[in-house]
Image (cartoon, rainbow, N blue to C red; front, top):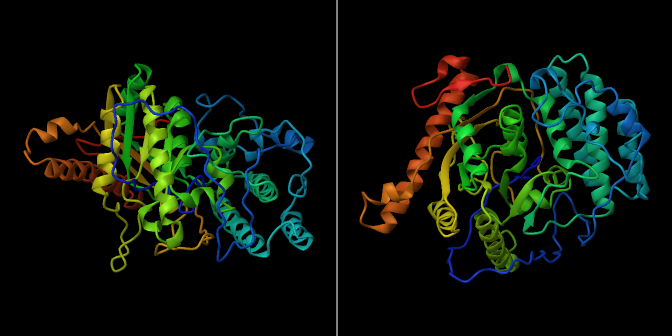
Length: 461
């Protein structure tokens, strides 16, 4: 999540699933407000609210600077069309500070942070995080060499800070099944245009683009699809959508992510998460951060499972989950990055949900490599409010052929062994694809890194 887990822990681990034959209620249940104690982001009250928006002549004038305004999926080359985040649009005024909408320079942007902090609207610890985020984003975009870098930086950070401040003034509460907010303010395109300038498309690759086409065809036929993936950064959802926006816009815009609780609580992360379709769950890694909340978290995860089951019964759904329960991290000794091992129960829960939906379903292994954009902290942190390093770099995405549990199970009489082998088969495929992407990007092999099972391309070329 940026969109994203702050971890975005766009990932999670579920309780063991019991599938019942009776239909579940279609009523969407809201998560009750909870008071958190944040070490870096203290003092934020959480309450239910209606997310509201604004319009601005400044936003419109900045949008007019953008030459490429075609709809999603019809853009020019992503590497040549670093669109301003303010192109997302806003159409309704609210009584909300306009400090960051009218900035025209770095000095005005930083002065705006200090002004909001002194007014008491912006907690000092969040203000410090915003300044750090700005500096890191600026340095990364400048390295891209884009002649419009200065304009992009000020515009994108101005809109990002405006969204952050709006949510602090009027906090948004995510339901177990959150649907991307596309209007009146388009949070999806806001996130896309914020991350776009950070990707070096000349050194980015997609593996097996033909399988993505097959996935789209299955969705159009009414089938369900689950992508079992590794998880690298808060920017994972935007990276996936940006690499597929030209060839597979349906996947890019309709993918639903299983997201950890940190993605919906970190003030610097929430606006990006609001633009994604999410199932909000609590990761096993953070289940006991606050022991007295553990039972509430388990109940919330059960509710999210029910919401997911309801969604899959409708068909034509595509869900992304990282069954590792968190972001990948480098080996502490070798410093090499690799996909974190999968939790067998998480994989099996998703498989059971698909099998019991009554709709044809398919499970594919998906690999992501983008840790250079926004690497996570070296260790898993309990506190909300991690530091965010940002870089301009190439990224990669790959998908492999569907893996069928029934075919795996025919070779194993023991059901538990079959579940373990199925999970390991998915993980092995993700690791193989990841290694190919790593060779292409970090070892400068480019398209020559392709192997028999992973054919790399740059579909935006």
